[in-house]
Image (cartoon, rainbow, N blue to C red):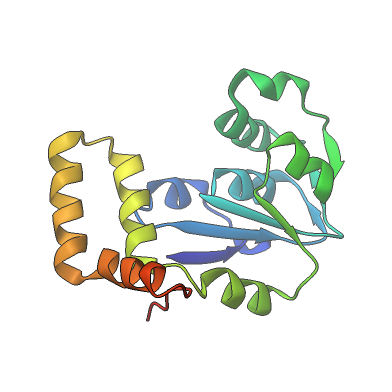
Length: 158
């Protein structure tokens, strides 16, 4: 898993080529390449005081990536909550990025998230999926979740 501050992204090609899960956070005025990076990420988070500007070709490409033809109805400037309602980000937070990330990751398996991201990107079909699930079971990831479910507690992943 990779966590990005979208203000630091300069190269979208590198971002879209990654195989692991990409979580991105935007704060303040998010526009241009930063807006595109946010929308191309697997999980996009905006600070509650952020403003998303869909103002460049790259940003519009990110909107189309997330929404398809519904991007035709996107407003060029919107608040974080409006962006979430439109489907351009997955979450809005008032927490500091470190706090938010730790809480978000607390009950999630990085190994499983990275596997899912790689499978989605590769579109490798049933054989690849079976091989990846066999690998996950060999590592014991699903068993951790199942044990926690049966014990009526949240899973803990290292």
